[in-house]
Length: 350
Image 1 (cartoon, rainbow, N blue to C red):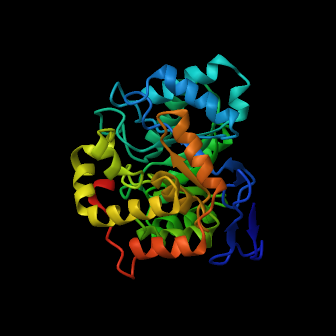
Image 2 (cartoon, helix red, strand yellow):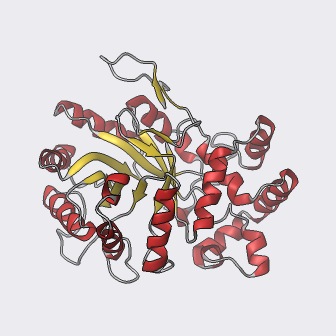
């Protein structure tokens, strides 16, 4: 659960929110919404995971108590933009009871067409994109509507005007952000407070052993504002999932191609030591990397992109098996935090 030690009249002080990791479900930031600490990310649906397998994965997730399903309007672009939302909509339509079992999250902001108003966070696009997502998802309400990126051409009053309209109409329940800087989170919250709105419930950011730069500003800002933190790419695109072993035996997928392959070479020495360390403690590298993320104090949930039920089960095992103090210290030596020798953000993750 979340424990708030600040005054309810003035809002949370920095560091006032704490995640207790003993439960599968916790509150999302300062809201009353309870989400699973492992979320199903659907970026692989429609390309790397076909529809039948995607539906089986979603069934398996719900059966395991995972209730947070995260997608975006642009996902499925390998087929066409919006394809993943359509797949999820068909899954929801199979059984009306499913909609009550899941916390449905999607995103807005990336280009959904070639026109000048088919992207960004203008009031026009936010409202139109939400209505299009609702049609594709075959639902009346999006539980968590996330801005995929900040839009520096649109003022916060316009953004919140659109979000407030959607909330009042019952089309959106909570608003979140993704890939925001720390000062973006604070600016968004200040604008929301001026309009007497709840503001952001969550921020979704990349965070893992390789990429720890959000520790500098994003995580402190989220804690100060009572914003839940959802982590995407907790294994850094597969780098922390035993990539060297997989490359050696020919089972690597994403990490064997393009910029991901370049990242492997850039971090090869550290990854070699990391995989050796995981072997020494008798745990799978993917489980170690996931356990580290899930047991960071600021993290609400990790968004995983499983291709099989076994991948999801591995993330759930990581939640149940925290690392020891000695193991955490060794990981800090291998992957120093920013300010203590940690690397700058990897360009291929941006």
